Length: 265
Image 1 (spheres, rainbow, N blue to C red):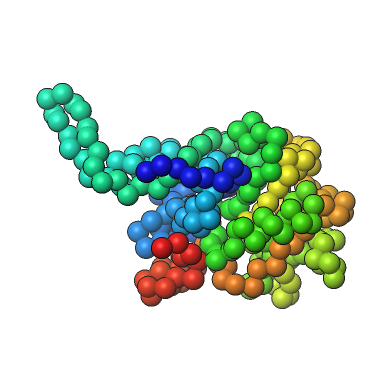
Image 2 (cartoon, rainbow, N blue to C red; image 1 turned 120 degrees about the vertical axis):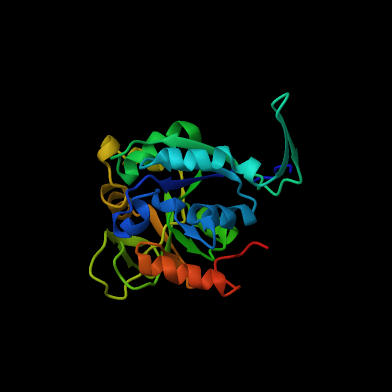
C-alpha cells in the first residue's frame, strides 16, 4: 500500500507504568491493552490516519520491547504469507497493513512526560507537530483542530473536554485562552486536558528540567501564564482508559458495533 500522508508528525506518549490498570499492565504497557482485540494505541493511530496523518513517533518506556515487537511484526501479521523453508524466503500476499511510518523511541523507564517529549525533539525537527496520550480515544476532528491552532497562533493548543474530573483543569477566559492550568484537581465540572495537542517547536523551550519535567506542570503552567496555551473545546466523545472499569466500558462500546471514536471505515 502506498503512503499518502500529511506532513505533520504525531507524537504519542506511551511510556508510563499504568499503575491504576495493574491487572493488565503487569503483563504489557498500557497503550498495548486491547480494545476489541487491538491495542488502544492502534485505535489512536487509526484516528489520526483517517485524516491522512500517518507519520508517528512513539515515546516508549515501560516494557518498550512489547510495542517495538508488535510493530516490527505488524506487516507480517497483516498479510497472508508463503514461507519457503528450503530458501528461508518469505513472500507476502494481500497485506491489509496500514500506510504508517512509525519511529519507536526508548525515552527511558522513569522519564516524565515532558522529558519524553524533549527526548524525541531530534525526530520532530523544527516544525509543528501533534501530541497525545497513548491511553485516550475520542472522535476528534483533527483537521478542524489543526485549523483552530493555526488561526489562533499560540505555541500549544490542547483539546479540552468535559468528563468526570480527575484530570488537569483549565481556567478559560471568554476567548478560550487558557489563563491557568491545574493538574488533577478534585472533579468540579471544569474543562479538562484531553490530550490531542498541536504544538509549535517553541514548546521545547518550556521543557527545561530534562527527564524529570512533567509536561502538565511547569511547561503547561508557564505557557498558560504567557498566554501561549489555547483550548480547542471538544464536546463529542472522549474517554481515557485509566481503570479496568473504563477498559470494560470501551470494549463494550466497541462490541456494540458503533464505537463513537471509530471515525475510520
